[in-house]
Length: 274
Image 1: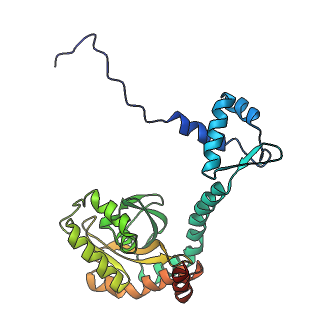
Image 2 (image 1 turned 90 degrees about the vertical axis):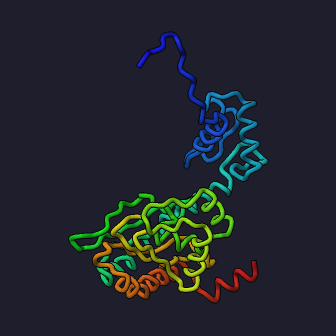
Image 3 (image 1 turned 120 degrees about the vertical axis):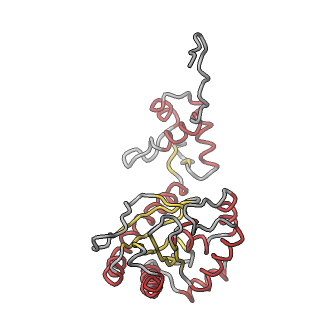
C-alpha cells in the first residue's frame, strides 16, 4: 500500500466541554471542612478568573446545584446535589436490602439470581448470586446486557414510561439469536403480556442455551426501579421448569419491594394524589 508523505492527520473532534468540566471542578471544591467558600478562594483553587467563576456559580445556582449565603456572599452546595447523592445512595442501599431475599431465591430455585436496574437501552447488574450447580450462569456486578433481549430488561420496560419504550425501540431491536424479538409491534405486545402476568421470560433471546425469568421491584411510590431475575442453562431450565419458578421470583421481588416501603394500597393513593 502506497504511503503518502507530508499529509497531516485530521484532528479528532473534541468531546470534552471545558465549561462543564469547570462546573464539575467547582462542585468538587467543597468538603466537610470547606462547606462554604467565597468566589475569590474558588477562583484561586481552580486557577480561573473571578468573572468565569461567577458565571459558573450563577448557572449552578439557577439549577439548584449551588446556594449563596446572603449574609456572607459565600457559596455552598445546593439541595439538588443532595437529592442526586441520595438517589445514588438509595440505589446502593437497596442492593444490600435485597440480598437476603436473593439468597433465599437462589436456595429455592438452585439457579443464579440477579438484581438489575435499567439504564437507557441496557440493564446493569447491581447484585449477582451464582448458582451452586456445576453448570451455571455467571455474570459480574456492573455488567451490562441489552434490555430488549433479557427477562430483567423486558420486565422493567413493561412498566417504564411510554417515552422510554419509544426511545429504546427507536434505536432498533437487535437480533442476538433466532429467538430475539425484532419487530416493534411484537415487542409491544410482549410488554403488554408481561404487565398482564406480572413477570417476564427470556427464552434464549440474548444467548443460545440460556433462559431467564424476572419480576419487577418497586419503590415506596410504586414505581418499578429494578428487577429480580433467575437465569440458567436451557437444558436444566426447560420452559416448564422455568415457569414453575415464577411464583418464587415474583414473591422475592414483592418482598424486596415491601422492604423498600412499597404498599400497593398506599402507592395507589399516592399516585391518585399526584
